[in-house]
Length: 463
Image (cartoon, rainbow, N blue to C red; front, side, top):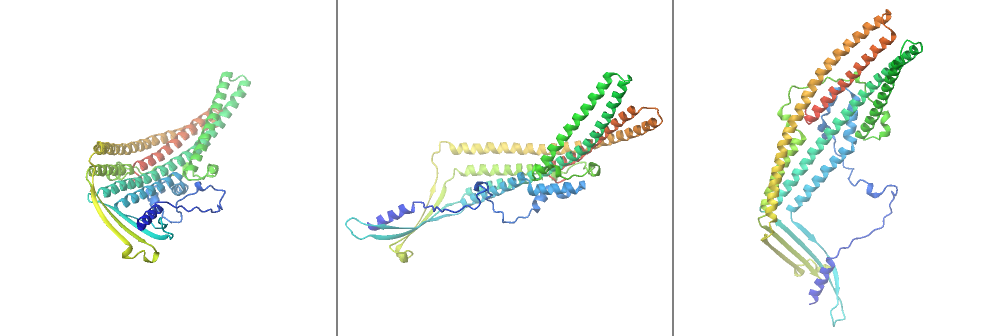
């Protein structure tokens, strides 16, 4: 009786959780604890795979060291990319958690107790150490299939990470080229505004002399104001893009005015565009590969749902050490061992398992259809990028011809002005036409460069 009561007392003690509470001085009171990163940053991991994601050699085709530097900064400092990498770590830990279900579970506890029986004056002490072992024998590989299913999600997260790096690199390149395009257009627009100011001044002077009507003078003034408004809008767009570039490369927008960039006239814009893209490249797109993985995962989930109808074999073991003193705790005399097992199966679940199986089958069909759609979308995006890049280059060639003709025309009119055949007003109006064509050339040159980036993104950086 004494041992029974002692054992019960020990069991009650072992069932209690004791959590130590320590008062520790917080030396970093300026930074709240919840805003500190809990990821171990001391572990050094190579970033080479990140640069392999974005194919840095392709970006060097533009022959712009500043752009290459911004791409590298984005790879290392962009916060969206850091979150994508941390998401991969989360999925990896989920795989490890699920894999633990395939292994035996072992638990142990220890405790001591005092007992005093009614009618006795003395008290007795007792020490106990129970060790429990439980294991679900995976005879039908159900838990193993669950681990494989979670692993597919982990592999998919790595493809999401790759897609994120390609997307951010593409965004950096696109924003950068639009900024240098605006640099050129703003410079040309400033010249146009100066020309319109001169035109307005000439109209104003001629109007005072009665050579030009007031309506024409007002029209010139309206044209000047419109040009100034356009210039303000262009500067606003450039400032917004500079802020956006700062965020992409992980810098404060306060540094926007200090961002370096090249001149659009110095960039290599006419990159080689292939006639077609091999199917081997299409199937290497991150979204295509992930869609394929999700089909595999859905198939595994259906298999797991079928195995839920099968019984499970559960094994359990107990080792109990119980003694009145610690010295004799681990002797065979004070040890109790037990081992058992049995099959466990469901007799009635209200149709839950059947519904779950049908649910997984429906999910499989839906994911399969998404895989087919992803395949078609990939082909469409690549074809779109190819045709747009090819036709924009043809349009660019025609615009350059137009620019050369406009330059020749302006040169002829300069000679006419020198000979006194046309007025200064006529000449500067021809000059404004030339500047407008130069703005169009700059815009189309950037379109050709961003077309290359679109093809780069559509092929998953494998162009």
